Length: 339
Image (tube, rainbow, N blue to C red; front, side):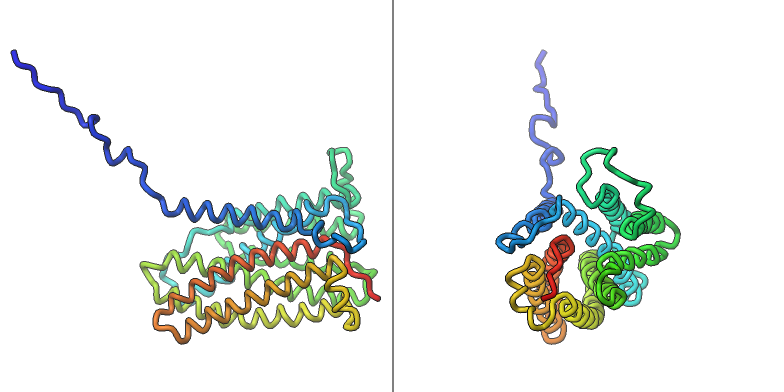
């Protein structure tokens, strides 16, 4: 009796067994590398800025700068998504938006605000055990009250993001901005309400600018096949609004700098103090961002293929992420002395 050679599909590798190349994996890895690099700026930046200035660093200054950077980043992502989402619905109301990040960003802000509140509860020192925390004392101090306000505001924003009205998160996010503006200008400062007002406008515009551009680019990617023309129109609309935001950021930044450092001492303090060095780095980065934004806008107007504007816009959002990290360092280094 002749035997029939057994045949089986396992003798040859099946296509399903060959791992498919996932282009998204490379982008995810690049994002992780950028996030790690951005985290090094607040961790190492304060020490580098203080080198040779003779100024004393606060305990745990790197960790505090990192927490504040996470807080700023969460604020930018959530506020920018609400802002740019409104622009997107105005341009193409029927198009599917990208996956929301607002469900996760406020939780990151909540964790960072909780960490900063723990620092305040331990007397502005890095706590090493729960016994060092005076939670009840937070209610009796101005800094403690503002820290608790930020914790609760991010918690409410996270709940709003999961509700039927996610836009209601704008109110708690505004509370975070107000708390940050008041925290940055204590009553012992000259004209603290003026300083708080400048910071309020500056931080609001910065959050909308940074977070808005991030969401616009994510929307362009989501619409690249279904509505490329709408994506280009959205970028153009955002660019017009961003020009106003940049003007407000520049004006409030200059006024705040002159309040911190009088005109006669600005040049010296930009190189001899940690605050001045960090501020100078931020100004240079914002100048790079302005050039990239101008390049994107020119391509939107004059190029045959207006999608070429995406390239400088992507570079712009990367540099803006670095600006956020440097801004966190700026809040952690000692304030300059008014000569």
